[in-house]
Image 1: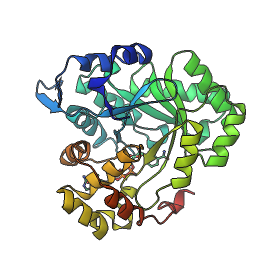
Image 2: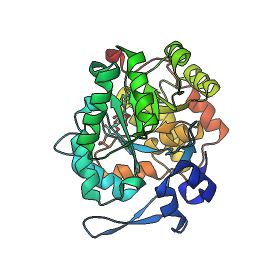
Image 3: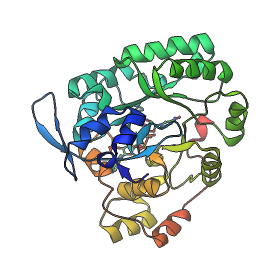
Image 4: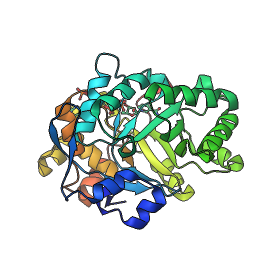
Length: 313
Ligand SMILES: NC(=O)c1ccc[n+]([C@@H]2O[C@H](COP(=O)([O-])OP(=O)(O)OC[C@H]3O[C@@H](n4cnc5c(N)ncnc54)[C@H](OP(=O)(O)O)[C@@H]3O)[C@@H](O)[C@H]2O)c1
């Protein structure tokens, strides 16, 4: 962690095969330049990466796409890429992979500069179905590989799905495979038969559900934690929380920036969603301030230690 893409060395580059890293070797510090399809030159922000358990470098901050649709998704993706997001998080169940794919195409960015995640939905579980669903995702996204593919929920024939994902990984069609919404015992079960250890578990994580036990278990297992809904999707009045507002004021930042910085300092990848370009820019600018131990302890007191999305359980 704490290694910006610009600081990636030749050895890491050869190991991960990330051409994005090579491209950024030629860029100055403090920002890179992207020439978009609309011929505007936009200053972008460099995002630190973490090295996953298979050697692949993954951005510590990405762009979430759930609920983005035909009206806004395409333009949001263009905007997100233009301000510096490289990790894009979608899923079959979001119904927007084709809009994400169109946005990528319109952005004019090279495919190998992106880190694209999609997820296998429950209805497609099982060996054969998973392989077919994966190909449909590729087709919708307009790409011939994924950087990360996750089992979205621990339901159905997880064993068959995992075998398919291991096979697709071995064929070079996915750079890293992982899971989402797996509780520690479900992960332990998968590890009894997996030939390839998941690189990621993407689980709910925000100040109201801090997941300390799950995080510790993932660390012990050598699996990177990624948090979904870093703002609890706005629930529990997060953007008016007085404790967070106090910390934000102290650092002259927004509550959103405090939440995302808190993820980063815990070593957890965050994927905030916004449909507003101003918020995209705000959310990606969290690298030049630090929450001190008192801030971290204060935020720890906000933990309700329970999901804020009970309807999904
Ligand atoms: N694996 C899973 O099961 C799972 C489940 C849920 C989510 N996810 C992933 O996690 C991503 C993020 O979670 P989420 O979409 O539920 O919600 P979220 O990122 O926690 O919150 C999104 C909300 O925050 C607002 N917002 C964003 N930036 C802001 C800012 N700087 N200031 C004020 N408001 C701001 C957005 O409004 P505006 O648009 O107005 O900015 C939106 O209402 C998803 O998009 C998806 O990719 C995965």
